[in-house]
Amino acid sequence: THNTESYILKKSAISSSLVAFGENFDMDYSAAYINCPLPYPNEVYPQGIQLPWQVTVSINPLRSIDTLRDDEFVTIRYPNVGWDRDDPEKLFAVCVQPLHHNYDKTIDLIAFIEYYRMMGVDRFTFYRDDVTHKIDSILDYYSRLNVAVIIDWKLPSWYEFERNLRVDGIYAALNDCLYRSSSYAGYKYVFGVDIDEYILPRLHNNFSEMMDYLNPDYPTTKCTGAWIFRNVFYYLMYDDDPVTLSP
Image (cartoon, rainbow, N blue to C red; front, side, top):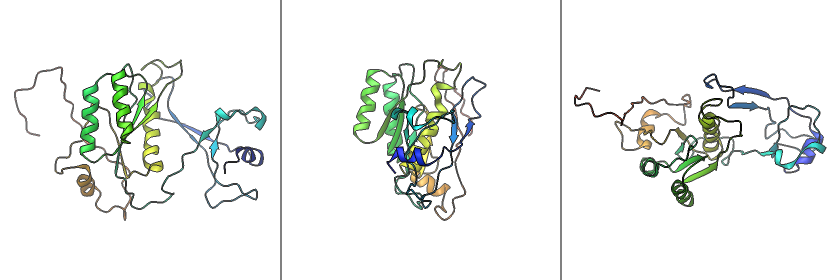
């Protein structure tokens, strides 16, 4: 329902739980989930209220409608394709960690996008903190092509890079992107990679062929939640090794 005032007045507050991410590297702050039980679509109250349209979070159990402001509410992004989907038509999306510290590697960014597009990706989500004007122009270009989603990403003033929160809030951004791309936008597979990371199939020409090979029983069997690919680092600051080793 869009009648937010009725929802607040007639439905009591719901107790939520806070679950912090484990990978905070012993820093002061961490990304976290706020888990809040919501009614199911078929659960209707006497007032006719179903799933909420917007929610707000408070540590004050006595807060009332009179003390709320509109800008404290967050609109819920329900799935565009419904709650159940057996075979989504959208296949591959990519999530990239926040771009920060006046990011300026134009060629790297373009090569990254075009490689993944060539392999079958048609949606990229970038979290823009601090980039150069040229990078802005590239992101805006792909946004106009409906290839990239650009989200402005600014952390509070207390944030100190790699001192009190991991890499520009990377885990909050990537988890936000995961749900935006899968549950909300309806993509079947979501890659979490950085701009200098490339997934290279060894036996197949593109990601569609690779995932058909890795996940042949989909959608009849949905037991695999994620794939982790073996990685290799290439250090460009060193000369090439003249000795070729067997893989």
